[in-house]
Image 1 (cartoon, rainbow, N blue to C red):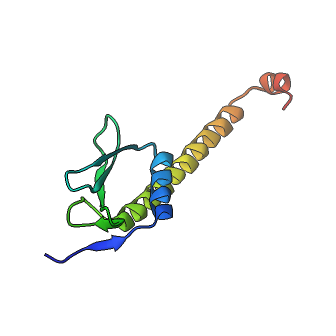
Image 2 (cartoon, one colour):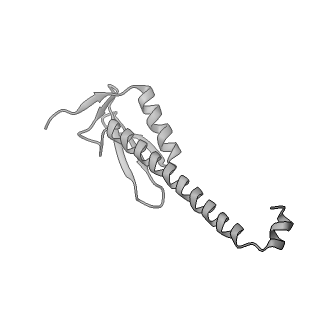
Image 3 (cartoon, one colour):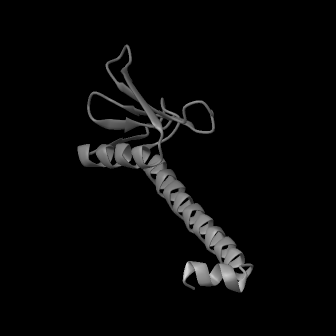
Length: 116
Protein backbone atom coordinates (compact mmCIF):
# COMPACT_ATOMS: atom_id res chain seq x y z
CA UNK A 1 0.00 0.00 0.00
CA UNK A 2 1.31 3.45 -0.92
CA UNK A 3 1.81 5.79 2.01
CA UNK A 4 -0.64 8.65 1.49
CA UNK A 5 -0.05 11.34 4.08
CA UNK A 6 0.15 15.10 3.68
CA UNK A 7 0.83 17.72 6.35
CA UNK A 8 -2.28 19.70 7.17
CA UNK A 9 -2.13 23.29 8.37
CA UNK A 10 -4.37 24.51 11.15
CA UNK A 11 -5.84 27.16 8.84
CA UNK A 12 -6.75 24.47 6.28
CA UNK A 13 -8.57 22.49 8.96
CA UNK A 14 -10.35 25.62 10.18
CA UNK A 15 -11.40 26.46 6.62
CA UNK A 16 -12.76 22.93 6.23
CA UNK A 17 -14.72 23.30 9.48
CA UNK A 18 -16.06 26.71 8.39
CA UNK A 19 -17.29 25.29 5.06
CA UNK A 20 -18.94 22.40 6.90
CA UNK A 21 -20.72 24.95 9.09
CA UNK A 22 -21.97 26.88 6.05
CA UNK A 23 -23.35 23.60 4.69
CA UNK A 24 -25.07 22.82 8.01
CA UNK A 25 -23.10 19.59 8.35
CA UNK A 26 -22.63 18.00 11.73
CA UNK A 27 -19.06 17.43 12.89
CA UNK A 28 -17.80 14.80 15.32
CA UNK A 29 -14.18 14.50 16.43
CA UNK A 30 -12.69 11.67 18.44
CA UNK A 31 -9.24 10.36 19.18
CA UNK A 32 -8.57 6.76 18.15
CA UNK A 33 -6.48 4.17 20.00
CA UNK A 34 -3.32 5.34 18.19
CA UNK A 35 -3.81 8.95 19.23
CA UNK A 36 -4.91 10.08 15.77
CA UNK A 37 -7.95 12.30 15.34
CA UNK A 38 -10.96 11.09 13.38
CA UNK A 39 -13.00 14.01 12.07
CA UNK A 40 -16.42 12.96 10.82
CA UNK A 41 -18.58 15.25 8.68
CA UNK A 42 -22.18 14.16 8.18
CA UNK A 43 -25.74 15.30 7.54
CA UNK A 44 -27.82 14.75 10.62
CA UNK A 45 -30.98 12.68 10.01
CA UNK A 46 -30.49 12.17 6.25
CA UNK A 47 -27.38 10.01 5.79
CA UNK A 48 -26.83 11.83 2.46
CA UNK A 49 -23.29 12.79 3.43
CA UNK A 50 -20.85 10.93 5.65
CA UNK A 51 -17.09 11.39 5.27
CA UNK A 52 -14.17 10.92 7.65
CA UNK A 53 -10.75 12.51 7.67
CA UNK A 54 -7.90 11.14 9.79
CA UNK A 55 -5.34 13.58 11.17
CA UNK A 56 -2.34 11.94 12.78
CA UNK A 57 -0.44 13.08 15.86
CA UNK A 58 2.14 14.46 13.40
CA UNK A 59 -0.52 16.74 11.84
CA UNK A 60 -0.70 14.66 8.69
CA UNK A 61 -3.85 13.77 6.80
CA UNK A 62 -3.79 9.96 6.56
CA UNK A 63 -5.70 8.93 3.43
CA UNK A 64 -5.22 5.23 4.11
CA UNK A 65 -7.47 5.19 7.17
CA UNK A 66 -10.06 7.91 6.43
CA UNK A 67 -12.75 7.83 3.77
CA UNK A 68 -11.10 10.74 1.93
CA UNK A 69 -8.37 13.38 2.03
CA UNK A 70 -8.77 16.91 3.36
CA UNK A 71 -8.08 18.26 -0.14
CA UNK A 72 -10.83 16.12 -1.67
CA UNK A 73 -13.25 17.15 1.09
CA UNK A 74 -12.36 20.84 0.61
CA UNK A 75 -13.12 20.55 -3.13
CA UNK A 76 -16.37 18.72 -2.34
CA UNK A 77 -17.46 21.40 0.13
CA UNK A 78 -16.67 24.20 -2.36
CA UNK A 79 -18.78 22.40 -4.99
CA UNK A 80 -21.60 21.86 -2.49
CA UNK A 81 -21.55 25.56 -1.54
CA UNK A 82 -21.71 26.57 -5.22
CA UNK A 83 -24.68 24.25 -5.72
CA UNK A 84 -26.39 25.65 -2.61
CA UNK A 85 -25.92 29.20 -3.93
CA UNK A 86 -27.31 28.20 -7.35
CA UNK A 87 -30.36 26.71 -5.66
CA UNK A 88 -30.91 29.99 -3.79
CA UNK A 89 -30.70 31.97 -7.04
CA UNK A 90 -33.16 29.61 -8.75
CA UNK A 91 -35.58 29.89 -5.81
CA UNK A 92 -35.43 33.71 -6.00
CA UNK A 93 -36.06 33.56 -9.75
CA UNK A 94 -39.10 31.33 -9.20
CA UNK A 95 -40.49 33.71 -6.58
CA UNK A 96 -39.94 36.70 -8.87
CA UNK A 97 -41.63 34.91 -11.76
CA UNK A 98 -44.62 34.08 -9.54
CA UNK A 99 -44.78 37.67 -8.28
CA UNK A 100 -44.82 38.99 -11.85
CA UNK A 101 -47.60 36.53 -12.70
CA UNK A 102 -49.60 37.60 -9.64
CA UNK A 103 -49.14 41.28 -10.47
CA UNK A 104 -50.26 40.70 -14.06
CA UNK A 105 -53.44 39.06 -12.82
CA UNK A 106 -54.47 42.05 -10.65
CA UNK A 107 -57.49 44.07 -11.67
CA UNK A 108 -57.21 47.81 -12.26
CA UNK A 109 -58.99 48.39 -8.95
CA UNK A 110 -56.52 46.18 -7.09
CA UNK A 111 -53.59 47.97 -8.77
CA UNK A 112 -55.05 51.33 -7.74
CA UNK A 113 -55.41 50.19 -4.11
CA UNK A 114 -51.82 49.02 -4.12
CA UNK A 115 -50.59 52.26 -5.65
CA UNK A 116 -49.30 50.59 -8.81
